[in-house]
Length: 271
Image (tube, rainbow, N blue to C red; front, side):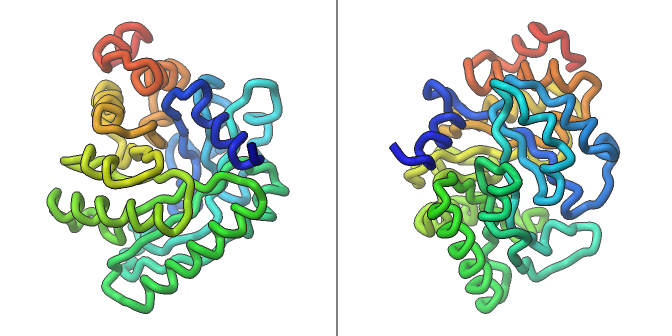
């Protein structure tokens, strides 16, 4: 068993699905409500989750979340993609390295996230994005670190449900073929087709903050029912009145198959 295998199996301990809490939004949005003091935000992430996703410069500020026995694993995003700056209306979806996997591992990363966007409208941008993706993935492999490949359409807000389905279906398989170990992507209308068409685990992302907590849990329920091996939730998991209670409910739904309605009652969530 390699070091990468060991870390990968920790992420899916006992064969269970994985719950990742994302707290890397400031890398593209700057300060956000509920994440102004990131160290404080991360301190409210429950130890029952498997992994916390951070930007490269934030791991050192949030070391308290990882420095005890049984703590979540540390995941670091290692490339920067212009399409995440929605507030600036960027169009081209260009990705560049933000930190080398070696430097991220030196900071304490146990899992690496590398984003890939294709069908940006430019063949040169697409091929450049693939080049960046493969370089970072291959370096992480040499370091014995699992890679979460994030497939993210350049402008998902402009896609119809059918277009999103087609792009995610094709994009996830391409991302897997390029060498990552698992994938983060959008939940789609026919998510089971996406998961069946890909040989590695797929985690569904939470996307926009839902008005009600039960809606986020129902999304997680649909992801798992569609063959997803877990979730990556950010604002839905942290920008709530009781983050720890919500995260425990999320783990119940994702890991133990508890219905969303029951998880809400079990953890006294305001639905």
